[in-house]
Image (cartoon, rainbow, N blue to C red; front, side, top):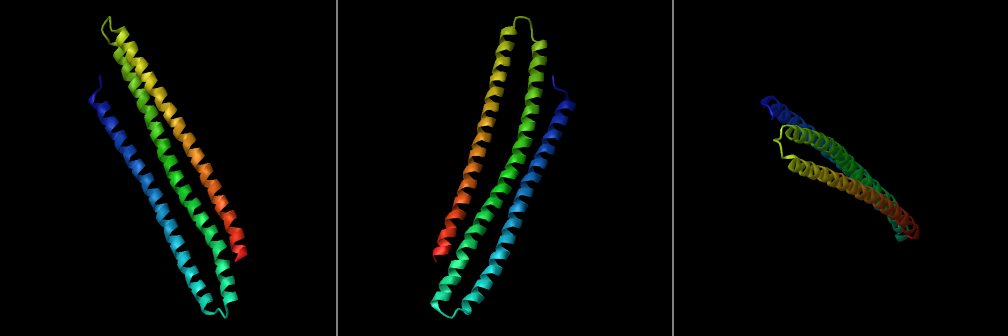
Amino acid sequence: MLTVEQILASNKANVEILLGLTSKAFEGVEKIVELNLTASKAALAESGEHAKALMSVKDAQELMALQSGVFQPLAEKTAAYSRHLYDIASGSNAELSKTFEGQAADAQKKFMGLVDNAAKNAPAGSEAAVAVLKSAVAAANNALESVQKAVKQATDVAQSNFNAVAATAADVAKPIAKKR
């Protein structure tokens, strides 16, 4: 049977977990805002430099050379921005997942403790019902572990695909820039 102290301690722990998760989420948002501000400042400065260079163009050939010189760095910067954004998002997600997994494991242990305590105090003749309950809890735990493994594998595959696409985009941009 749960005591008032156990319930209060559990609620306090849950509030601390919520505050920690909220703090982690805001850290991720702050990093994204910082990345966007940095990228915007750089883009603004580069646009100004490019506009100045356009004003000094003397002929069409020089204009084509100037324009082709912009394409490769733009593709590389776009790929770098995407990688950085993805790193921030995946890092924040990993931290939140780690916290959630730790709390889920702790909750499972506490629940199993309650089940074991209930089993010890169960009336005679209820052994079959207790065994069914323990079996159901074990099956649920196994299913949760399987889902967590599948999510991790899917995340790993998505990250590999993202890295491959980013590398391919940068490689494709190089010959296009040279042709111009």
